[in-house]
Amino acid sequence: MPFFSIIIVSWNALHHLKNYLPSVVGTTYPHFEIILADNASTDGSKKWVKKHYPNVKIAELDKNYGYCGGNNRAVPYAKGDILLFLNNDVRVEPSWLDGLANCFQKYRDVAAAQPKMLWDSDPQYFEYAGAAGGFLDRFGYPFCRGRIFDTLEKDEEQYDFDSDILWASGAALAVRKEQFIEAGMFDEDFEFHMEEIDLCWHLWNLGYKVRYCPESTVHHLGGGSLPMDSPRKLYYNYRNNLRMIWKNGSPHSLSWQFIGRYLLDIAAAAKTLFEGDGDSCKAICRAHLDFWKGFHNTYQKRHKRLQQRTVTDNPATMLPKSIAVEYFLKGKQKFTEIFGV
Image 1 (cartoon, rainbow, N blue to C red):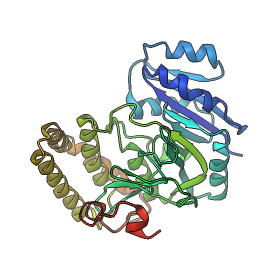
Image 2 (spheres, helix red, strand yellow):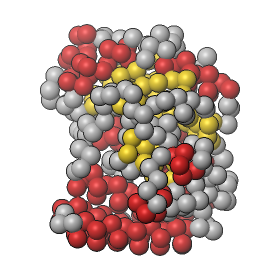
Image 3 (cartoon, rainbow, N blue to C red):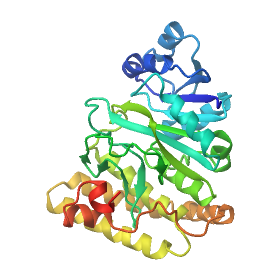
């Protein structure tokens, strides 16, 4: 049976730890440990965890390294063969690790997996960050089965079958430690958002697979680090998406994929300006400016990954349609309406 090292990054989020950590500690699977990666919190988080849950390891970091840096620096503390990066606002069901363990035992070529992710505020709905597994469209737009743009589906067991996905949500991402290190861990240039998609896409290019495991269920609150409508969140999403495409795109598709995405970004910026949302327009423009400022570094990372990759084409889980066209122009708001599965 695999041993899981559950890593929870936190910064001044004692309220989340009080609400959500007890469910993680109450996991019934026998082989796991919990590591709190504390990004130099000043709200008493470490003291509270040490008092109430002394068996939880604490990686006491010297400053706030964010999601990527905090998780990366906690990995040396982990003794498990499976790393499970869990957000501090995720409530788990007691047997949640059993399904993930079965997945990794059954599929030896699977490097990463994600449980079913429901919204903690209303568990009859899927949750925004991961829902029933992540995909990319032909222009690199991320979306999920059960969540496209801002539309959440009710969980009616329509996606209760395990299947390959392109990416697993960083809110509850299980990945073999050996492959995580082989892939270079999380890219800390991303800071926030899409680092898990970048990692999973790279794993596919290395010849591994990413899997959705509905036998495991978690409940995610979401929006804890950055509000959904935050211009800062928008900035990270647009900047990091361009970096991700450049780092991982197939040699056969990179040019048209990147140009198509770039033009769609310009259209999105124009739309926000037309609607009078100047802050969002500025965030998109700044994202593009900073992408080009750091382009040399991104280009070097792509060159390194091209030498590592064993698969020439894009993953089969990159779906050959524009999700924006299907959603905004054709009015299709559910995964099954667009892809029929």
